[in-house]
Amino acid sequence: MIDFFLKFMVRIRLLIVFAFFTGIIASPSLQAQGNGRDFKLWLDELKKEALAEGVPASIIEKALAGVKPREEIIKRDQNQPEFQLSLASYLERIVSESRVARGRRIMVEHRQLLDEIGRVYGVQPRFLVALWGIESDYGRVLGGFPVIESLVTLAYDPRRGKYFRRELLHALHIVGEGLASLDDLNGSWAGAVGGLQFMPSIYRKYAVDYNDDGSVDIWGDPADMFATGANYLDASGWRDDQTWGREVYLPADFDMELVGHDTRLTLAAWQKLGVRRLYGRRDLPGREMEASLIIPDRDSGRAFLVYANFRIILKWNRSDLFAISVGTLADRIKIDESS
Image (tube, rainbow, N blue to C red; front, side, top):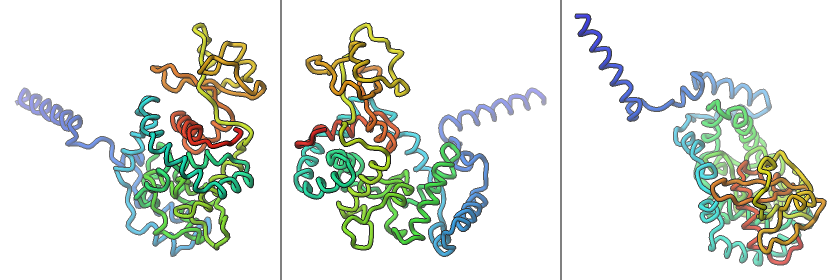
């Protein structure tokens, strides 16, 4: 009898292990991802926090009525292409020839507006157009996820819950303040909205009604969209007398301990270490400007000197591949700007 019981227990354990690895028992659920917190209780606490911050009760109830976490959002968060692809594959996908060609046409089509906004905020227009191209394919892919639901899911997930909880509260304030309606708030799985994919905190703080029509349309009005993006970049410390960086040549005996964002040297110092422009191995420009050296894809070995503006692009999306793509597209659609 004891032998039968032991064999039975072994079989049960084997079935449990098999079920886990084959998906019969799901990988950690959203309930587990919420550290075991009851979702309803968590949502009630959120509602109280929003109410205490001054969001109207009617807005809170309407926005959060029936909302539930979505497994799809978590899966997308865990499988972002910026962390899955090589540099070459990412650039091929993001900086396509068709995207470059369209970006050049947009630079011409909106030149007067872009030049004006560029002067007002001190941001080179090509970077605004490049961000538009990469973030939403020039407005063609704005995202179809209800922002409130996306942010609820990511706020409930403890991995980055604190950050997304604040973004969720900003989204509720946006509706409460009349900056946008709930119907407007559709966007990416991560809760970003508009042609330049602003997170709610950025939209709320830096929104610009550039054409002075009483609303901020970052979905379909290039003036409001570009001005809001430029306002954010300017407030972040953007330099219109500098570019983003450049790909460079490294000597064979280069000290790889110097690679990384934490090391910042002048271009003159990098020059002494043997770093040169990639093509023709010419001297580096702007010798007193500070830069960091990064190698985002160790397999390819491609190296980049990146400047202060690069670090500001990283505030948009904390991925070196993303920031390099923005800079690369901006370079390729450049018309006659000086930097």
